[in-house]
Image (cartoon, rainbow, N blue to C red; front, side, top):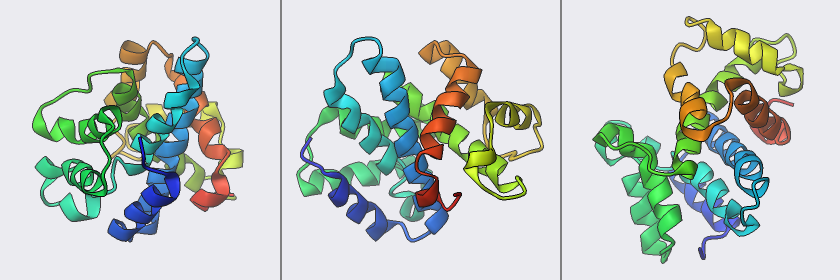
Length: 196
């Protein structure tokens, strides 16, 4: 992977103007880094691939503003831009493209892609939970609060609970531990998310 984080941020911000969407991408980047540490490094995996996981999280929605009316091309356009920059890492490119796979009838195919699939929806639920706290800060959000909101189908109704629950079947992580991992990862970057 030749792509650096500064270059990835420049690409993301060039194509994504909405601040909340940018913050969503930062949330998923943090979540993917936290999940890598828990699922891969803890089990003896290489630390070297952590940046791939984080980069996939950061760029997964990078073309959304340009593909939201053509979701069949969602994430494919980002992969095209990366290839034009010279990126050739198959894991990175396929990981990003997998995000739009649901719009093309394709399921994730490995641990990283399933982690993205599940945490993408969870980050939105966590942000919504923070925004209904009196201080609107992530620091006041607990795993229990997120799980309570998870059970309330009318709360953040757009957050697909079924996708989040795939963490148990596809990743072997309980919902509670999955929420804990993603929440703690997001709390570490709360200032960047406007929730500190």
